[in-house]
Image (cartoon, rainbow, N blue to C red; front, top):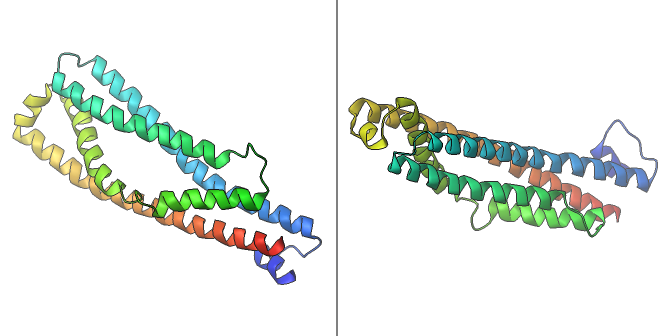
Length: 200
């Protein structure tokens, strides 16, 4: 037990099982909060993008194709927002007042499905689609021209293509770093769960 405690915090000496449980609880909450921060950021970005899409659509009501582009992007963003809010609430929730070990086990299963499950690689398909839609929405709006007219302009198309390639690189790099960070924290949660099992 002494070795277990030291591995958690080398600056604190073992005093009681209660203190050990408290340390594990604190470390678990801190790790879960890292996921909550990412989800909260995602929610803010989704809301900001949806506001932009509504604002630009109101100012481009005569451009039907532009409205369709924004509508498609709005729908995908809205689904992402709902999923993020649902996941955030589920990560926080403990309405049945479960012991920490059981509560953590449920979160580990949920995060494992999210990061390594059936749809964990869906972002590979979604990122290019989202980038095309976002690129069109922003570029067309600030060119003050109908979408079809922009698509016929060679200079505009080069700009869109360049923006797409750069955006694709940045997006995949960022998502890769975030996933690596999330997987690392998932391993920490699994380790904490193992330690809780040892204590109990």
